[in-house]
Length: 316
Image (cartoon, rainbow, N blue to C red):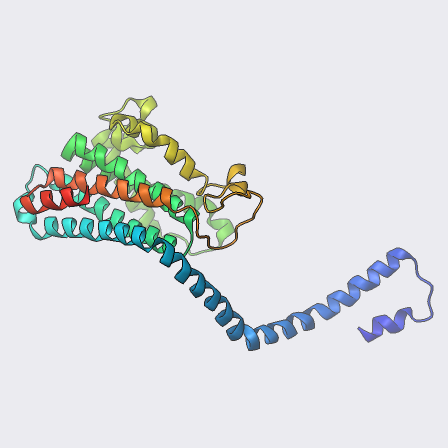
């Protein structure tokens, strides 16, 4: 750096040369500046993070004092829903037979995922993240629609839904292979590629070419133009919930409205929310409760006993 300074001493220079000199000095000094800042950050990070976490803890305490009754009710709903699923699993011999084996498996897996997502939503709300909660509810709603559809159309549809995991795996594999030159990750072994290609070919022979297309597992129920999530939604007569679903999409996607609209902001919409809020939980909380009860009801209607019937009435 000193050599650059010495180079320009007692020398008349124009504006462009000045800019060039400043850039050279900055380039020379940058590694030292970064190293010094890293050392400072390392020495002070514990204090910085402690203060930040203390503020978060104080906020969450105030938030949960205001909302605890509603949060507790939603948590009770999740716990009772879990117990219903647990009861069905523990009594599987009573419910399971060859004519409903796929239906039993799929509805239970969807129900288990719904319980997990409901708990994620609770954690997000208890920590002040209303927009994150509504984003996760969007997935929960999709699970409720799929559960209703599979329940309505039975064991064969459940089997086609399960088999479709092979299509999704194959699509992920081919995308990975196409982009791996840029990624630079490990290559997929030829044996694995051949195995997945064999699996896809077998599915084509079994179900036809339409099966390996988007939502192909619905091909025996829906016309080709309706093989999409909205078509499934219409088939189970839940399209009246679509406005809430579209609303929740703002919290998932990167559209322009999402940049300006947050359900966690009340009043001044010009605020750029970068953390938790104490507002906006009624929508995601209510929707989560409704979707979870719907998913649990779908399970119980297919595998009902007296205990589960009582639990469903309690949940409702």
